[in-house]
Image (cartoon, rainbow, N blue to C red; front, side):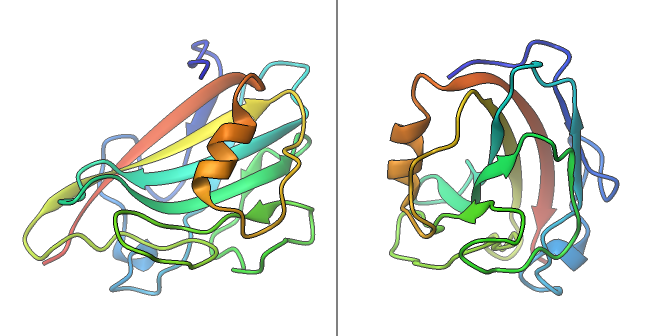
Amino acid sequence: MASSNGHFLLQSPAFADGEPIPSLYAAEGLDLSPPLRWSGEPSHTSCFTLWMEDPDAPEGHWIHWVLFNIPGSLHRLPAGLERQPQLANGACHASCGGVLQFPRLGYQGPRPPEGELHRYAFLLYAMNQPLLLLPGSCPVAVRQAMQGHVLASARLVGTYANR
């Protein structure tokens, strides 16, 4: 995968990089997807793919959100995106999952074990072409389809502790 070129930035008005994610966006809150905005992608970006994952999950990586084929003309996502397989703008949700079977579409907010602080990485990839996948595809299929098509990536990390 390509890495950030230093100009491609992913931010949220809800939390700064390395700072806590508000409980509104956690499973114990309203479980809304946080608002995101980005800029500085390569000029020939066709679309974007967004991942949210917890690298601190006890049993291994947990994928909380995959949204692919976000139109290249978009530069923000509002809070509380619908959990439809395909959004009105054409973007598609993949299934979430981790070490256990969890066939849920759409955003799944932070929910670490009680008393633990986890990091949640939001990764945005600028793509040179849309992924030829159906809504609900598994994360492994999305990763495979992305190979060779990532132009740049941007990263935003939030933290969350379940008290």
